Amino acid sequence: MVPMALFVMVFGAAFGLAATQRGLDALSVVCMSALVFAGTAQFAVLDLWGPAMPMLAMALTVFAINARHLLMGASLYPWLRDLPPGRRYGLMTLASDANWAMSMQALARGQPGLGMLLGGGAALWVFWVLGTWLGTQVGDLIADARRWGLDMVMGCFMLAMAVGGEKNGRTFAIWGVAACASLAAYRHLPENSHVVVGALAGGLLGAAWKEAPHGD
Image (cartoon, rainbow, N blue to C red; front, side, top):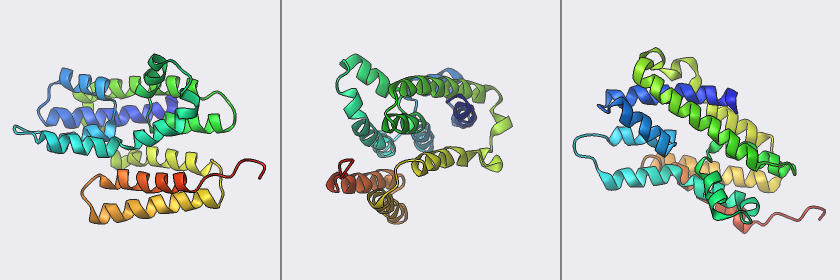
């Protein structure tokens, strides 16, 4: 996960710069990244930051963006349910898109995947916090990540993980429904709602359309 974490460090630096430009001091910014560890949600909160902060709107925005973690946790439940609560929730504290995807790939192949969830999450967290600190110090050097195409790295990584998984009619249908629902929500519903709408649409179809047992 370290090569991916290097790109996460760039985004962390961009966040550190953006947060200081909004008036936050460096210590508060670094503490936010260390305790929250949710890049997209942290950027979204910055858009609402100001002298009179709409707390309810901020809470709803963060929930909508991070609602996918409900499905991520559900997908890992078969491997987590026998663990003591402390280990189970400790692992999920470090769960993010990239290490979750790689863990699921390993578990689907019958390989140990929870170590990837823990170790990969730790690597991403360290580089995210380090990047945030760098952003509060020298963030002007990477202020425009889009100029270098770095904003596409995580999306391309997740697409590669999805394409590398099992392919059948059920999987393609779930992808299609999730994509269409997400695009419709992006056009017609409030900002960030497309994340939870797409995830719920795909998740509901997957729950209703049971996967056939292997060998059938």
